[in-house]
Length: 165
Image 1 (tube, rainbow, N blue to C red):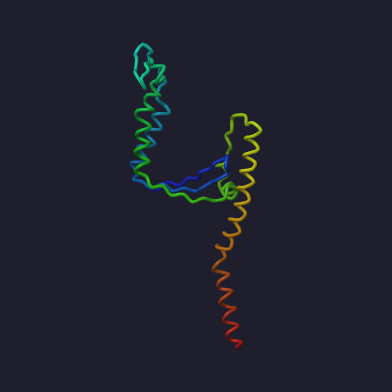
Image 2 (cartoon, one colour):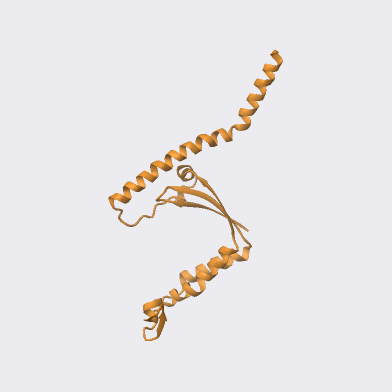
């Protein structure tokens, strides 16, 4: 089975189209586990049960939190890691702005935190660099896209020049 997606980085302004290949049951198991993890009840764990981790003793609630957290740590994460090992992943990088035109729903910036001035400045530099590289990419892409037409034109010119001789 194949699964296509669009990946976006809204800090460095990079993007890609990715393809994942795996047997259907791997995708199904990953989806099912994630769905259960999302809806698993959040029942607080008791704190009187003690666990020893990294040489320190913690209450179960203090260390793990809720039943949903336990499910995530011991079921969801291992299943996800297993499914990622069984999945072949291919990515093709494209200019950020070009993919944004094609797939605007994937480019929502869910930035719900305040950025300081340094971070804003850094993101602006990243954005301008991404635009510059994107323009260079599109120039090369348009040449590549039109290569057959350009090559046919060159062949006709060569034939015309040979006929004149």
